[in-house]
Length: 507
Image (cartoon, rainbow, N blue to C red; front, top):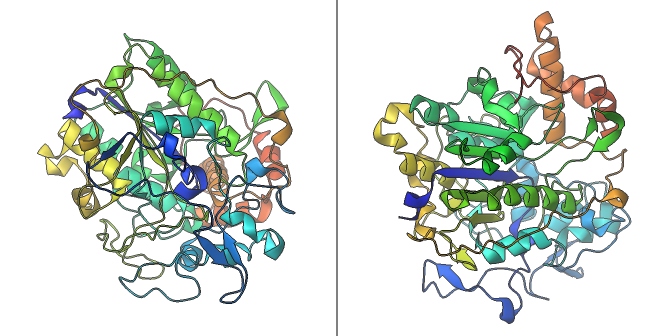
């Protein structure tokens, strides 16, 4: 088993891009085709895009066909191709359903026809004039970092988000196997679920969450009440890099990495801005590429990299086009088997997202899929950790969700020997001075959720209001990047504490 060679698992979860959007054109050139498949003999080529094959229509049958193409181009609402799509697409459950099934209500078990992306995007501020950009994706030359890593290690063309909806529910699945009954971000109410981090701690295993921020807290920290008293486990990304470099003081068994979701003023020069590094539309994808390159380089240059498995994935598709229908038949999770808002039974997966396995035990150029009826999704990470660390030897110390029990594991993709020792050197891209996100860009829901929790944390001593109160207040007061920067300039870096917990330094 390949995991016998692994001492440290690292997961980097980015934001809001579909597989087609970033890697749809990965293997369109027969000279650059995959070298290996798992499972072997599947006989199905890499399921990416082809010219003139996949399309949507803006006004239904009879209207012009708009095909999936690359590279992205400038549009009235999107002057920089690397910021396609601009503005941010819809990502709530209701809108995702329309993207997948068009105007029709989904018939249980019937495959989605993936026909509604264009019409749904036209209902944003993009309008009809810029709606076509949702059908555009990035070619290998446009996103060279994720492309090079996908070709140098293993990429899945059948990894699905755990639920057809937003960030908070899908991050709930990667940390707990459930969204606690939430089907949208829903006023950013924290989840009471027991997390993988609690399970690790109860079993005597080490863990850490490393976030690329100075002022804004970790999203994982604010989302789960059972982590509020674990502030010392939440550390800066620079600490991750230093642990990778030090063979005597190594990474924890499990590390989770977070990019920067919210633009921050630099504490030493507050009128300069550190922009998001999460790939989230309409942020410049090259900033996401930069952070991915930094994370990869930290692992690549580690003296013990042969003992590290780096998993890179995205929490959800964020409204970006994909042509593969998400499967039905996913099991109801626990807790929260039915959505609180609309009785959705969590019986279908979300849209495909990129997923890479980077390890010396991965054969270069591999495309991997599940070898059983259940596809890979975010709970595959939890199933892999469970078996790798023996966490289910005492079920009371693990997690109850049936999703985890059914999920395929990653160990089968890894070879029992070190087959990929030549990790490529990938320089971190240059700074992108001329492509910064405009200050009047609307804040997305993830950004507002973090800012709302900061507001509640800062007023916690006064006992001011529920999370719903602070969510509404944030939505009313902070609309744009400029509003967020103005608020954050009143804060100082250093403490990293979730609401209701004592302040604790972030090391």
